[in-house]
Image (cartoon, helix red, strand yellow):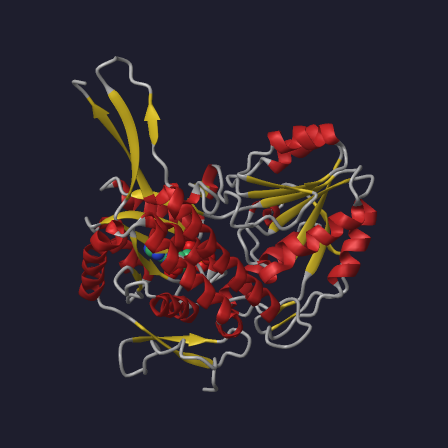
Length: 475
Ligand code: ADP
């Protein structure tokens, strides 16, 4: 095992004699280290400690919590190189992208350090003269979270920062494939002075066991989940029994639309950014491309030429744009979708269609039809199927023909069309002449089976607060 970081971020790592989870590098298969695993009773004890700690944490003035979050933010920045390297090692994304994610993840801590000071209530004109009505916002209590492997840091800070700023304590189960980044960001929070019981990272013997505790423990008042729609559905079903409050950031099937009046070169740039980030493994990655038939050939030619320039390899190496996919199962799913699309009549527009271990070469597919499986499934890999369309009406129908409603993108220079299409798309987020839309200042979230709730922005902290209405009578 070689040295992973230069700092003391990895003090939590355990030896394999203890109950531990092995973490491997997807680019090389090498063992990186072991993360601690807790037994059922230990997780319940962690929840009880989180409950105790929350009482004192909520009593701190918002400004004091804000100052601690700010220290955490600066420590994340100070350690960005080590965090990025650790992320690339366990997740595979190119180092430049990993650095981008550390900054993106840290931006939520900075943002909610500020927002925590502005959780205002209201004064409401009462219906009779002898009454006064006001509202206050209070933290929900212990908030729990389950997060995925594709953004090992940002999906945690995007939940932890608003929870802590609101006065909740927070307990997260990170993805088993990328727990080291989670423990490392928590370590920095402790260095910043955030109490250990207020922010806890736990891994259990298996994910379902922890999910069962988070959805049934009476002291846990909230579950925020990011992951697949399949698992989100299970967690919502489990949460139903105790009417546990949930936020869900689930799967997507983002359409990327290019109209005949689009700036084609800009659309190609946006398509590359939106499709191939994280090797296509994000829930907002463009999943299917719809291009007007009058510009179809031009778009395909320019897009394929750029895609052929992308370098696939170990994310630690200079100049690599696309790292490995996360697992063999992920790779097999991607390749099977491509295989079936080709059988159904799609054609490869790029020169390469190959893979080596977990490295999958980016592919553009042309002559794709809207009813192919590759269009309705979330690909989660570096494959871009491109469909031709003729009318706006047909296009909107195809774009909305999915159970998902997370991100969507379109390119057009026509102002009337821009408004009409933006309003007609049944999605929580629309990129207009823009392929990268995630930012801490805007509300991230989906409609339909892509989820419930919003993260980031001024709305993000409301997910961790209850509104209480106070009615003063007899005045
Ligand atoms: P992905 O396809 O991104 O891996 P998943 O929904 O499978 O998405 O995983 C996201 C997170 O959900 C991970 O932390 C994983 O361990 C967790 N998870 C998977 N199955 C369950 C389950 N039955 N209950 C609770 N958490 C689960």
